[in-house]
Image 1 (cartoon, rainbow, N blue to C red):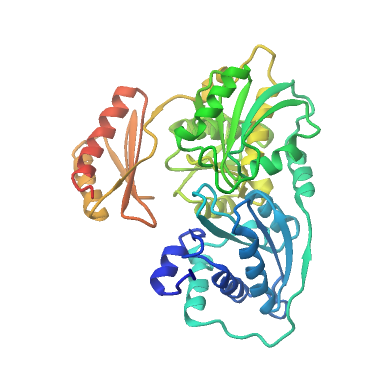
Image 2: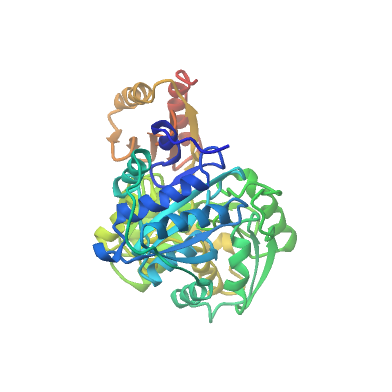
Length: 466
């Protein structure tokens, strides 16, 4: 089946931050070619227009990846721009390549989505994101209206393995030379973690116990989406069984990392954000740390306690990266397991976050375990994200607002959806970018308080549920 090209089909494929859909009915080789051409025109990459004249392209382990890459590359070259094929890489490996070479990039991945999906994450030179307002809208319009033919010289193709340079660069950012030996279980979920972890840890003094390292885009063991608790159950059991110091789970394209302590308990990404923030503030006093509004209040508290400045943003990597650049922030974290580093071109890297966590634990005494290390950062009880399909997103949001507005203690913030804040709790309700969904997050000092405000909001939302 060929992918249909209509305004509606492109809207479903070309989303707020990337391109993602099922293969081949939503994204196929022909459409990849057209997107490659439109990418060149939109970013004005040709050297005659002052562009960098090169695009580096990588892909994950999905079977549809190589064919899509070949056709995207042909599209780029048709429009007079050279192609560097990197082959297999993690998404942060591709981001590294765009920064290291200072060229535009395209990563073919559907991240944590099921096997039938594929997609493209596009970047400007230096890993700058391409979202709806920075290129994706124009790419969609060009594909829909027709690509102008280019009559100049066609681009050339070369193959270059940049993964060894990527590994060297990571090691230059985190010093692991003085850490004690740790036993670490790593669940790659049959994704790109299984490709890059052996190279990263090859010469380091750690015992790595691999789980599901075989590259398999059909995900035979579990979905490569560690934010879903069901997908880290195997890792939790294995950490306890092996008496390991910690466990790490990567998502499909290995740009996100999730952690498990020595007791097999999952660790909130907010806790990891706070831990890395403290490390980065020790390195550079007074720096700005970015966190989205769904992360725990503990993040801002830890930043303040360590002499930094916490800056709150909307959810989404394009917002975080922009605010990081604007404020020269040293580090940023999201509730979804994305961690961003100024030294990594403001891009997110699950592997770099993992190295920071390992260094933090490895530099403690033999008697310090992971759960005790992170205890100071774990101060609140969170609901996790609860999604509800509703008939009318705006009306339902307003009903929730009307409910909490009656409480004189509550402050209402509209930075991203609606956030209702009281001295010892907060609730955020925000719409999905792509579906008629409301996403609810709540947090409080006490579990009973969190459950109370969570259920108050949910009872209103679910009255309008589809």
